[in-house]
Amino acid sequence: MTQTLELTPESVAAVDNSGQLADILGMPDQLRDALWRVESAGLERHESPGGLIVAGMGGSAIGGSLARAALGDRASRPIVLARGYALPAWTTPDTTVLCSSYSGNTEETLAIYEAASALGARRIVATAGGKLAEAARSDGTPVIPLPGGFQPRAAVAYSLVVALEVAGLCGAGDHLHSEIDVAAAHAEQLVGEWGPAAAEDCLPKALAQGLHGTVPQIAGAGLTAAIAYRWKTQINENAKTPAFANELPELDHNEIAGWEGPHELGPFSAVFLDDSDLHPRVRQRIELTRGWIASKGVSTFRVDALGQTRTERLVFLVLLGDLVSLYLAVLRGVDPGTVDAIDRLKEALASG
Image (cartoon, rainbow, N blue to C red):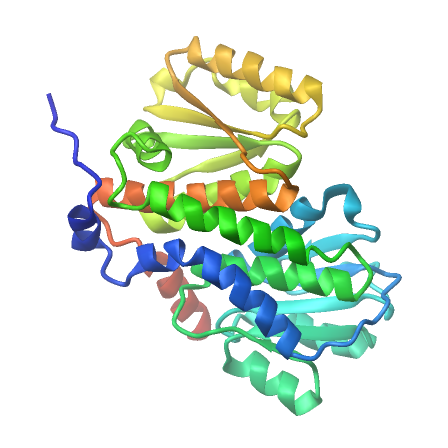
């Protein structure tokens, strides 16, 4: 029988060469610092009847998806993600475009920055530097400065808060200052309960042990749909393994049929991210779908979002997923910080 590796401070330090754990555990302070950075940028309220477009890729875009989920039905205007080189065809000059690129050199986001200028839409930039910061300062476009030293995906607290605050400033959603503060306090408590010095049966460690050696399928709905995608991408980048995400009830109309034969392909697992505010029929679907998948010999897990507000529950699950992905990297013996495949692709694109 193979001995299970314990997730201790020592085993984490052995592979975490770039300090990804510290960045994850720093989420409470990052949420607070992000609020301060937006306030310090001196942005003026500017009503945008056309809503908000968050332009970005990867870790710089996820904040927009999470912000839209945190707002839920409190979003009074469209909040749309632009993950690519172009704005949606329907974009009008009365739309606010938040260009989010941690490095400031993301070519897709730079292209949208120029497209928004040509259209005459209001632009706001969130970046740690690079070409985007240079262009924005040259144009007189407001810049929310992000701190340096992070992997873009590790700056999720900043991208979330910036998107929420910009949504409030352009009239696309409520201001959620108090919810962010409460979420930060809750996350601070969780950091102590879930860090590498915590018991081996704490939630993120137990989940990582259960998912280790499998291809995880993460399912969400409502609030948790965007978080399920965040889990998938964090497992991809930190643990360097395939992972996939889908949304209920849609997956019950297609993906569920694919669970007839996972044993023929390899070890899979299924994680369902639940939330108390989900439609009762969706919560029933989670139980029925999980039972069906489990009947095929697949390990399944249900995780409840805990917290009083949508933002608090969202931060709970984001922090949990980030830690699960890091602990999976430790179990695999891989450095969670490096993303060689992404870097090589960018180099190839840059060379033409």
